[in-house]
Image (cartoon, one colour):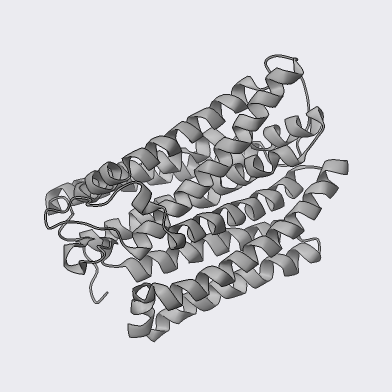
Length: 341
């Protein structure tokens, strides 16, 4: 990383957009993963209403990130989306079914109706988080790419131990993130329940994170290459460790907002470490590293990157402003009324 060019700028920008999605939609998915732990209908409605005003806006970051990837690195978009086609169809189905469940769940009073959509909401959230983690795990470990830059594997070949471990860790991370968010948005008996679930999910995540770190260093050593070559980058690893350690510290003290910010920082630093260790590759080829897709051989023309950067400089601040506005308007504890889900 000795120079900064349009290719590198777009590598960073795509990473920022997907990080925004992970941080914002992560607690949505975490709330969904915890949804069936509640038994009372009112508590499930409160859980839904804690994310009701913001969940669809959060997913804008996924659409924006996917669009940026297509515009800046079309070869990566083509290879990944064709190679992971079935996995992405499952992810899309899970996200759609989850969204439909949020909107339809309280439209009818019948118990069987609400239970059906409750299961759909929880299953869609867990499957989405798991598939996102599995996709990241495969990109980190490497996938078979031929000399033409095309995926040369199969769907079942993506379900290897390391990607599955990353998938489980992602579910644990989102559950922790969602539980802490739920604590901030609720009160009364449900608040107390979520506090207990948050404690357990923090423990679950810390165990998963420690296991994943050890497995990565032992079996995916190229993911530590940049930090070995540039020791100053270890500061990001240190920041990640400190942010993880600060989550239970602040949560135990009752500083739920600071615990949530630490959870956000954990996600951001994890994505930074992922991006740093991938750079300049976007998709690492295994077992033929020479076939890897990087920010140069998979990029659009310099003119396209330049024009799209101007558009991004206009569009991204708008998305940020919209997101900040929505969270400010719907700040505070959840209150049930006739307009609630």
